[in-house]
Length: 113
Image (tube, rainbow, N blue to C red; front, top):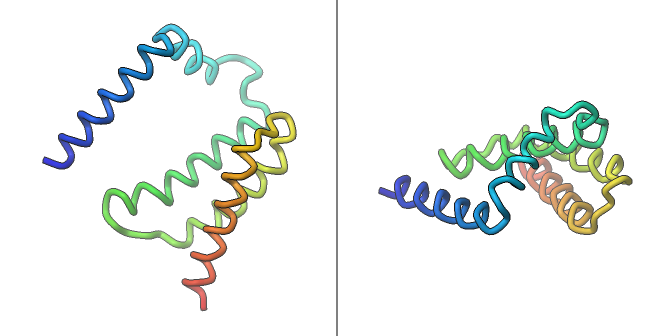
């Protein structure tokens, strides 16, 4: 039952937000992944960092399991993302990845010592 309610929430909220933004705008945004020149260094790092963070978060949400070793990857990708984000030096990106470095550090130290 929880999965059904969560799926309904996800689809309802996503559909509402996509409607407000405009489905055409959302489509153009997703198509950027396939445009020549999109996959420059900072976008590659950003995608890698996103995948690494998802790999840490999803097992915890779905199976209540922490794969703490993945924090080694997120520690690296978060630092790298701040470094390569000089083109997109958004305060939210810098702050989020700085916090993630702290989170990964705590998890790594907790599991090693």
